[in-house]
Length: 104
Image (tube, rainbow, N blue to C red; front, side, top):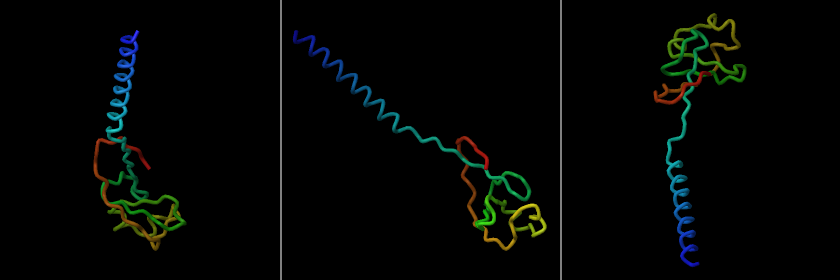
């Protein structure tokens, strides 16, 4: 009797300790990070430096690279709802990492 119960209880404790340890190890893993790569709506290239985003409600999703933000004129936007007088917000360059890319 009693030794079988003790052995069984010891096996349960070891098993639950292993489960707890594996849960603890998995919680220490780095979260998956997805880096979004933006494209310039004027020159259609991937934005690698500063990104300028139009915050005007007329523009749903309009981004410019730093070069186009500096050099483009109203006529460059004739196929879009963007106007040169719209307010633009600057976002700094994204840090490169080993994250998986996604495009916007």
